[in-house]
Image (cartoon, rainbow, N blue to C red; front, side):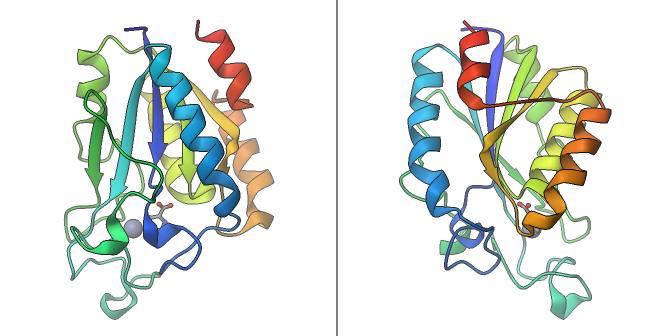
Length: 190
Ligand code: VGL
Ligand code: ZN
């Protein structure tokens, strides 16, 4: 195992085309991301999937005063990983946003993600997935804060609002997160 993890954030049915809270252009993400996950696995990189995993009465839902339509209810179809992505044995799966309160945007927020990464000797983290301005952003900022060498894989992320992406990427860069195309990061991970 290398000292590197690929964290695939929230690539779930509800965040993909046709889902309750779809990011833009996810159809162009899925096959390249699948191929990249396989290449990373072959290179001994730890693959982590986060899944937004809310109770039915979650505080982020509009009916409860939050900003979002109902999405990613734990165990329902919308919370499934979007095919063709799937977790294999040896991958780590992290459920987040499981409490009623708290948006749970970050994969590190009240989860075992940091512990799992440390257990596996991880020092470098690449972040892909959705949505750029919410859960990818929050997960990358927390990874950097936790002192992982953190890179957002710029061609393997998708946003809800593309107009917001430049300022989010600037913020990430300003906090020390690297921005790099996925293949370049993978090549540097050998
Ligand atoms: C997300 C909004 C609400 C995300 C999760 O995965 O980016 N966005 N819950
Ligand atoms: Zn959510």
